[in-house]
Length: 144
Image (cartoon, rainbow, N blue to C red; front, side):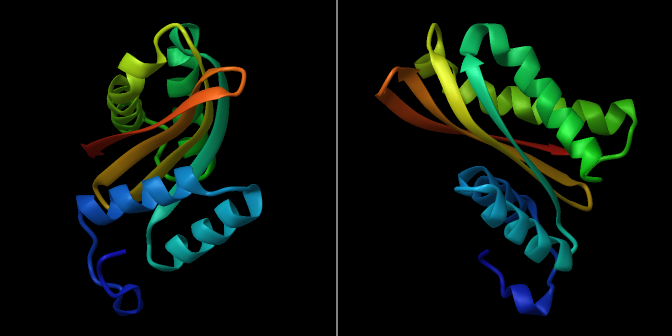
């Protein structure tokens, strides 16, 4: 993070976006859980979920996974406003990788972070067929 994390200063959209990206980039479940614990100490609530499949048919499933994991991890409350914020941020992140992903398979991780009213969703996916992959990241942000 760009601010001194030991001072527990307030965080803005840039720092929360960075947290979502770091979660999406985490290499395994242990690293993901470690990051979540560190961010929680700072008051940043996070969630992460893996996803893989054909892109066009999977957009709704990816958005649903982001919303469900956010509710399960306590990042958002069970109401349409907060669910809509995560869904919208996820849709924005997916729209950024869409030109590369149309007609291909994607696989990777979705990272979600929230601090007070800031919610960010990052998607980090390998895109392609077999071992011929492109790599792409998308980021969306909403205010609740």
